[in-house]
Length: 585
Image (cartoon, rainbow, N blue to C red; front, side, top):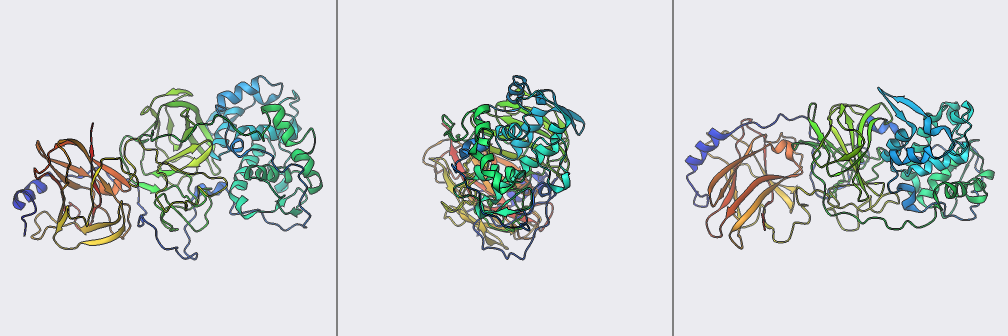
């Protein structure tokens, strides 16, 4: 029976057969899992480590030395949490200005990073940004340990042991190895803090963590412990004029003072950092995004599965390839454009500060097209590449708020159960994409039709319902030839409250079932002016709204959106999920 499908099926088949085309070639392999809460996967199932994880160790340091009592801390508070992660408007240019006004030698220090020469300020800014650390922390530690900020003495011994770290058989000799060690140790401390790890001292002795330390305080204590003994640590933290607290206060003000005037989380303001939608290959892992495998991945949808993408990822990976341009996701200021050592290679990097507490990081580029300074949304800032810790071309896109990594897709899982929001080093994530609505919080007035609703109708063979999608379940069927005698087909028929212009969008779910996805889903939109066909590459646009365009619709006029399961590559998935009509004012 075909009475529910407006128009002749034979005419539809001819149109479909004539109009099929392939979209952009798929540039990355999608690792796909169901996109709602899934049962915990066995801990025995392990993921192959990603090279990006090479820069961070696999857990707290070993505790093989003798045990000693925890040091006394006269005042447990060493640094207010916000100050540990973030200093407003203190990027590479401001760091350089600060150093220029100090007697120390760091203002003149320059070093080759790959094929570029960078100032110390640029090197410090890029690495502390990547690892969510206020660069003032590192500067204060350098001043405390070697006096390189306020003393003009640039003796090689001072530079070689700037942080006074002589562990690992003195392998970290030199200013940059010392700084790199300190930054990564501060980052590891963020990761390890919830398990109350022991402190390891320069003589390999170990002690419990002093009571009352915040995540930032523990991180500072961890770095200083590796350079001293348990007996001396208390005075190095906040016990005398040369302590960390006193040194930081002298340079930048009291680190324990509560940060004031910090911006609130922004309304959606980010655009896609590419000029076309491409496949997503890795999500932000809400279960400790510290580039460390812990056999658990939690995405913004609340999924928990170690094979969904790679474990511990702190951003989103988009499967683009050269010569695809990378775009500024919003207006802002380029605060770094150059090379950064990300642990297993030199990456071409751009970092943009958006002036609202947010910054965006664009990693693994093959070419950089901007210099530090103002930049507008959509400007070409680089070319996709595979520099640094990468096994193949892609864009690693990372977002931070007040210095801490955040997920621009927000949190759509159960309320209060976001592991990253509940982590001492983490924070709540909110939807930041301005070009599409959150699938978990649709705008007021949105008309939505989903599979299973009375206004969604399907026919033909091969239909299967799977968990996932906007409403918790999605439908799929297998594509056939346009000449098939029994063509699977479905339509979404909206009940519109008033005539007017509406933007039509459909969610393409991110679900794995072992079958390739359609590269040429041909949606037919019937509207007041006639019929419009829109071809969507479902394999590339998964986990995204496909924008089918803006049209005028009238209530009761038989308007609809249809999708036949036809693809040039027969036997692929055709996905059916929520269709929305967004009224335009």
